[in-house]
Image (cartoon, rainbow, N blue to C red; front, top):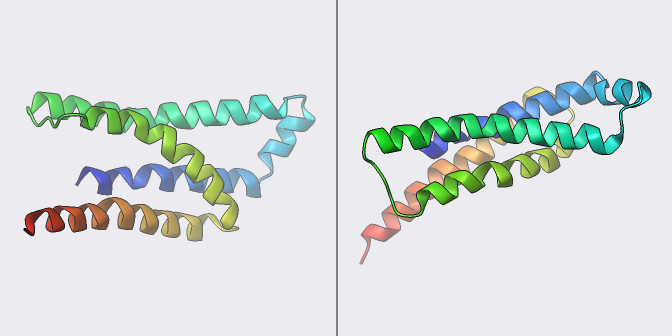
Length: 126
């Protein structure tokens, strides 16, 4: 269930990246004197920190409800470090933010929601 909720994190990221590209905000900032490295570093850092907010809430609720699996905290901590660059790379495949949101949500829902159910089902088989 958590993976289905976490599928919304890259969906929001891709939408913002494409809206920013359509409005050419990067171009305006570069003309104003911002360095290209500073632009990408600030965006990556901000998106990574925003992705850690739901992770922190998930880990807090896992602790409070005493639902703890060995090593799962490491996966949650590493998730934003993997999904943010992946979202940036996949954003170049789209030109519309609506299509990007739908496709990104579908891919992450399929990978996180459906594949975890497949693994759980296969573990039940002898």
